[in-house]
Amino acid sequence: MTDVALTVNGERRSLDGVATFTTALDWLRENALSGSKEGCAEGECGACAMLLATPASDGATTWTPVNACLVPVYALDGQEIVTAEGLGSPEDLHPVQAKMAEAGGSQCGYCTPGFVCSMAGEYYREDRAPRETDTPRSVAEPVDACPVHDSSDAGHGDDAEHGPNGFDLHALSGNLCRCTGYRPIRDAAYSLGSPDADDPFKKRMAQPAPAAVATDAEVDGSRFVRPTSLAETVRILHDEPSALIVAGSTDWGVEVNIRGSRAPFVVAIDQLDELRQLTVSDDVIEIGAALPLSEVERRLQGRVPLLAKLFPQFASRLIRNRGTIGGNLGTGSPIGDTPPALLALGASVVLASVDGEREVDLSEYFTGYRQSVRRKDELIKSVRIPLPLAEVTAFQKIAKRRFDDISSVAIAFALDIEDGIVTAAKIGLGGVAATPLRARATEDALIGKPWNIATVKAAASVMRAEGTPMSDHRASSDYRSLMLNTALLKLYSSTVIESKEVSA
Image (cartoon, rainbow, N blue to C red; front, top):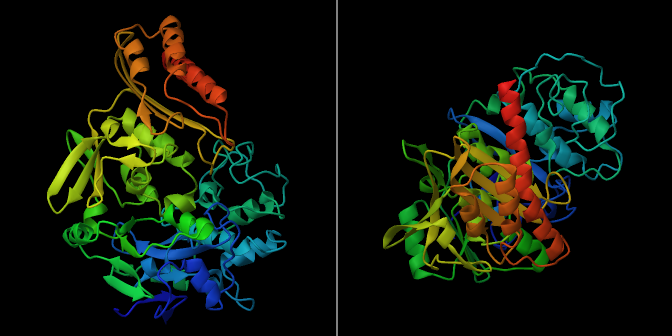
C-alpha cells in the first residue's frame, strides 16, 4: 500500500488502515471533526459540505464546496480540504461565520456548518463583484421567508438570485435548513464583503491546487486505485473487468450509504487528464467524461444553449461540483437529466479500451434498464456534440421541486425551423421508459410540416404515446403521458412569445 494521506485544515492526516469504502464524512467524524453532519447521506441536504482545493483556470486554487457524505475518502489522497472547524473558531470567527451569527442565521446549528462551507466557497469566488441595484435595502428590511431559490424578491434590481455584493444564491443550493428559515441565511450572504488581502484562505488561492497522485490502497481484501493515465486505466479494466469505475461518486456514494454497497475493487478516474478536457472545433464539441458539471458549465459559457438550460436544474451546485456527464451516462438511469439533452443534441459517446476507441451514437447506446453497449473493459472517455447546433432548443424538467430534485419526466427539444417549416427535429425523453430515448415518431410528425398550432397539436398527440411510462412514487403513468402531450405545446408557445418580442 502506498502512503495515502490528505491535508485537513492545514494538517496532513494518514488514511492508513481505513476501509476503502469509507466516505469522507464518516472519516472526518471518526477523527473528531464532527462539525460536518450527516443529514440525509444522499447529497440532498448539504449538512456535510466541506471545501475542496481544486485547480483554477489560471493554475491557482479554487475553494469548491462538495458533499463529504458522497466522496470516498481515498479519492482525496494527496488533496486538501477545509471543514467548518478549519474556517474559524469560537474565539476567531471566519467572516462568513460572523455574518451568519449577526443575521441570526443559525438556530439548532445542525445545517450551519454546511451552509458556512458553501457560503465560503462563494465568498472566495474570484469573479464575484458588487453590482448596481435599483432599490438597495438593508439586511434588516423584511423580505419573503422563502427558500434560497425564491425569485419573488424584487429588492435587488432585476436579478432576484444575486445579492448587491454579487453573491449567487445558487451557491447555497443543496443546503437544507430545518428550523432557521432562509431569509436570515440569505441576509448573511448578501452582507458579505470581499476577503481581506491577508485572509489566509485568499492567500492560499494564489498557489496551485494539489496535483493528482497515484493511489493504490488495499485494506481487508478491498482495493482502491487511482491510475495516473488513461492507458493504465484501460489496462486495469482489461485485467479486472469487474472493477467499479468511480468519478464524482454522486451515485455510488448513495449506494454505499443507503444500501451498504461494498465494492471489492474501485478504480477512480475523476482526475485523469484525458477525461477532463473540453475542446471546441469547427464541427464538434467534445466534453471529457470526468469533467465536473460545474466546470463544463463554466467552460462552455452558454455555448450550448440547451445544456445552459439544463445545468441549473441538474441537482444542486454541491452535486454538480462533483458529478460528471460520464457518470450520468454510465449509470444508465432512465431518469438522468443529461441523456435527454444529449439525445436531442445528436451526441455520441466515445468508449475507450485496450483495443482503442470507438464512437457510438447515444441513441444506440442504451440497451435496457441500466444497461448499455459499453463492455466491462471499456470506460466512457468523452461525449461529442456535433455542430452546428439546432436553432430552437428547450429543456423541460417536470419534478416536484423547482431545483434539486429527481425528474418525473425530462424532455429536450432541438429543432431547425426555416421559413416556417420544421426542417430537422431531435427530441430526447427521460423518465418514460426503461431507458432514455429519442421520440422518433414525434420527430417524424414534425419534420417537413409548418410550425403552427395545427402541426403541434397533431404531433403532441403522437408524443403522448411515446415510451412506456410507469407509475411510481414520483408520478403516475397517466401523468407522465400527459406531460409528454403538453410539452410540445409549451415549446410552441415559447417560440411564439419570443417571435413577438423580437418583432416588437
